[in-house]
Amino acid sequence: MADKTLVCKDCGAEFVFTEGEQAFYAEKGFDNEPQRCPACRKARKEARKEGMVYAYYEMSLETKEIATRVQLTEEEVLEIIRKKDEQ
Image 1 (cartoon, rainbow, N blue to C red):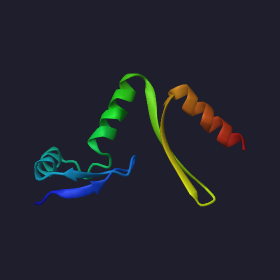
Image 2: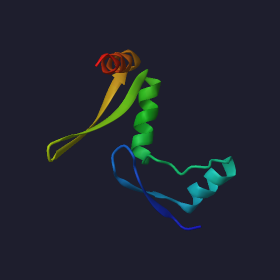
Image 3: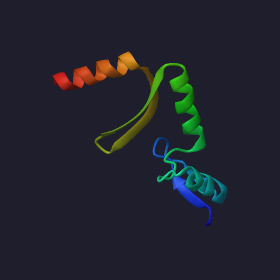
């Protein structure tokens, strides 16, 4: 088993999934590889501790692409969902 280079689904940064981490995942019975880099995993964990929801948004405006990370409360997320449903 060799180290693998993965791409974070939140920030797009590459990170290494080491042999040791792969062995740990296999030992624990995890079927999937990590999808987030250590920094994004830590940010999500901290956000959950603070009662925040961590969200990542991407949108394209003509040829320009915008990506940003925001922290929202659960109530804010529900409000966004309600507004989208009303459209």
